[in-house]
Length: 232
Image (tube, rainbow, N blue to C red; front, side, top):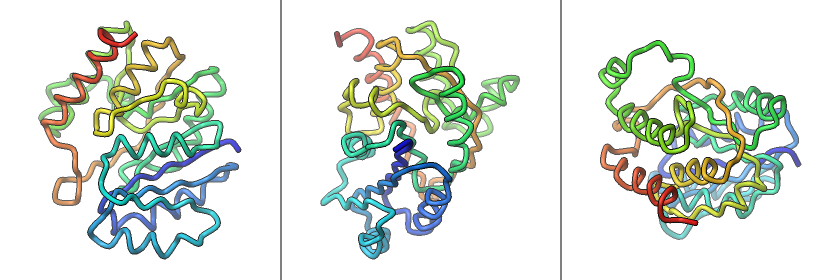
């Protein structure tokens, strides 16, 4: 099997069915794993009705263990050669996985980061932050990774496509949003070959259900520093 599509969700009732529909439309030998973090808005009930769908593997967590735990469970269950985690909120286009796989295979990479900023390299960082304040966290974390590992990434925390064998080997443990930062740090420290591909991105607002907060940058930065300086 070539691809595992991991759809993690928490309170994504307006978009979960569309996300699953788009995942099913990906014309690649694949499996789709949907993990619900104990949603309270009706998402869980929708997924309960899909548990007999042979094209899906639906996991209903008994409580919200965190976004990182979704990644941990998804990696453990994944059987595809590559794992792709676009989320259930439709901020990304599912079909961008095609260009990410093309880059992965043409350049013999272990990981491809879907960059929201690769096509906006000429835009000043000040303008980006003024446009949307959450870019500040992305810019700081990406700068720190580039500094610590001599990389030139534009965006380390968009969506990504990674070899499943690599994910199982590096064994990320963060249950929180820090998972994504632990992941990229371990990829860099382990010397895995990584690249970027531009991806579509339509961010939601907090009113629309976006859960990332400014303070999430604190555990994220700690995850980066912990891997770099305190892990063998």
